[in-house]
Figure 1 (spheres, rainbow, N blue to C red):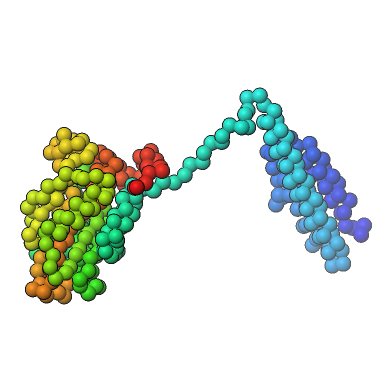
Figure 2: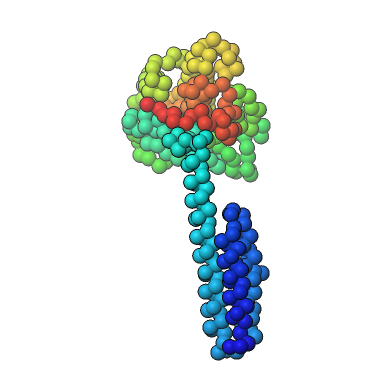
Length: 349
């Protein structure tokens, strides 16, 4: 094997092992690794010699190159561990280092306040016998408008208020779009809520955003009343806030309910004194509600002379603002980690 450069290979190995033993930092070890084990390293270049050897010589020399590579890699790993141990021992003997002090707590994720309140709402409504349903954010003009008794000339259909995708599809402007779907899906009597995101093409301010969250509620039965609706809303709000909340009911017009109402709660951010959230009125519009319009029941395949219902559209984003006294709705979807970290460890008891 006089033609095989085995002695040269061993000489390179010895130089590599010497360089490893003399290295005193991880960076120096990385340099040794590149010099000898890299693609253009001193050891790897011996693999190119294989093509010049006879078929009988190649296996033995190839094995020798691999053995040298493994030996140098093992030496590098051993030296890394030695240097780590040296650094650790030096740190422990440093008079300025106290190993008994608690370490720095790693950063952890937090549950978004919208999710916290949504979970609690699900729990409350399930305890009241409601289904919790999920319907599309991209819906048709039929379910979002026509089936809800919204005529073609209604202002809500205007391009200034709705994000249209094409002539038929749009980003739903309210979770009410799920009402007729639910009527077609479930045989009455039934109670259901459908929480989710909704989208409005409008200017943003402290109490309005183009994307926000709602919870639609629907109850269909033989005999339902406004009194039952009010009682359910009072139960919900007292459970969410852990105390009685002052509310007021005033007339409101919504094509899909008759009669329709606006349910407001006393602003919990300013205590009713007036702020940007309540527009200095002391009251926050929380949810439109009312008895389901007969035309909507018909669209759902129900006979309005046999079945009645009530519905509400709870502003989940505004409810979260009241629950945590947040003064600007835009914080909720800002993605600002400084804002979200305030809710670390927060729960709804």
